[in-house]
Image 1 (cartoon, rainbow, N blue to C red):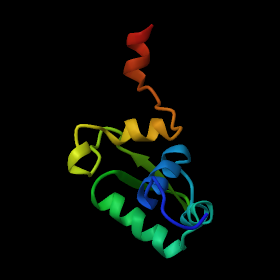
Image 2 (image 1 turned 45 degrees about the vertical axis):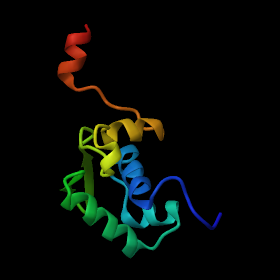
Image 3 (image 1 turned 90 degrees about the horizontal axis):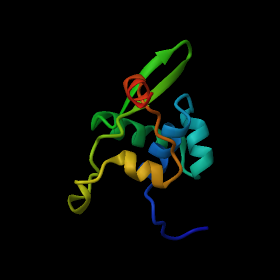
Length: 103
């Protein structure tokens, strides 16, 4: 559907990375409907601002997100990206320590 969207391409890329940490730029581009170059630029933006980190695993890359990073909007900086991602369907994984405390 052409036209405007409620969620930016940066948020969509971040959401896909959160849901599939080993997703490729080509897969992201096809899923969102943007070019692979645009996807790589967004990934570089997210990495430069510490929203994600990349780790090489064989021939692929595994992404890790930091769900505690604040949203970039000045009006929303009291909210974490993890909250946005959960709204978009991401399931937050509990840390080993959180699991031990819950028992």
